[in-house]
Picture 1 (tube, rainbow, N blue to C red):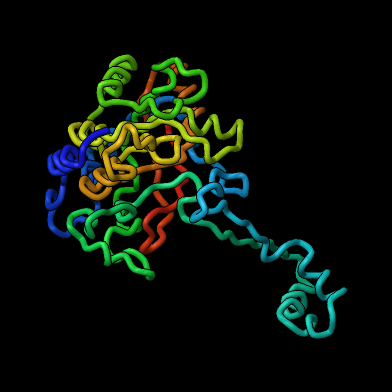
Picture 2: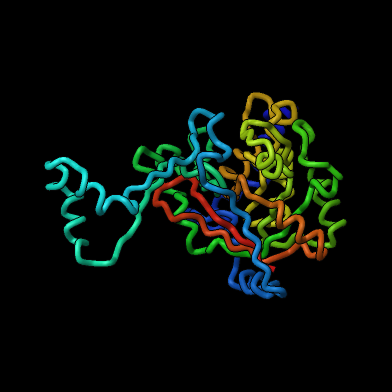
Length: 331
């Protein structure tokens, strides 16, 4: 376990406050230039589209953590409403909205269904906005933490990133394949910066400025087989924040709950999720969590190509500190 003084030293070294101006709300997404977007598009050779998003359903990974629940999907209009309610409903209902709707469609063949969903914005495959995590009353770039209120995030909301797509060159680092793990990474054995270098070297791929690094830990594949969203798994060691900074990475995503290893024995004394603290608050680097990387890992292993065009724009919820995403890799 590292000391708080070591944590503060690393945080000071990687802090990007003011790097792109005092009003910057994009953080490391600034590394995604028009040239980078064009480079990513040039990686498409086969036209293979690989979805990386999980299902948003009652069977999702949430529920064990009491402050988030799985999505609730409700039909607001279905095939029986137009006729059944009017035919069998009481007089007061036939004179209400349902009756008006039914009367409107009485001599018209057009019918429709409608629905709604109630869910936490980080219920399944998602991006953390850089306003999601803070410490010592400061958000990224020194914005005050109290600028996030019950009305939403005045600074650093997820909607601010729409100018970047988010699309760039994606690079898969397959930790499962590298370690020879049968299913997923057991907790307490985090991925170190040196191991990330080893994986990239073994895969014949280099990490460049503006890349989005995607880390395959096998957790989501494990979840699909067990349905246990509370089962812990390993992830990146908190010191990988320096590695991401040194490579000018635009964002990082993984197939697990937290990207980083949650085991406090491998963290920083007196803190929880120190990599979140450094990356989001100090670096301005977004995290993608709960990405389904099984099919992508299989495809990359088959053709030996671990780079691709990644397209992953979040749902543009104004003031949100995180949002659902349905990312795709194109090769």
